[in-house]
Amino acid sequence: MEYWERIKALREDRDLTQKNICVHLNIAQNTYSQYENGKREIPISILIKLCLYFNVSSDYILGLSDKK
Image (cartoon, rainbow, N blue to C red; front, side, top):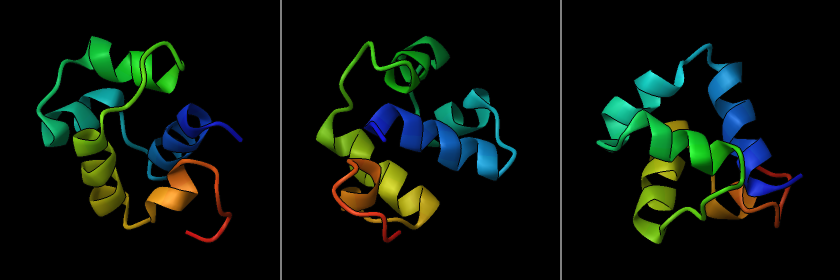
């Protein structure tokens, strides 16, 4: 599973909208949408925030591990 599929699945599993996540990350919804669609790579700073927000490892988001 690609990283963009993982962040989308994490968001949907928690019944969150992209707007909910964008408020926490302090980024535009269009930017986050591009992350979820694989059209833009996630900067390290955003990856860290996503890991903390979803309480998962970066290895999980990046697809290096299936252990959250």
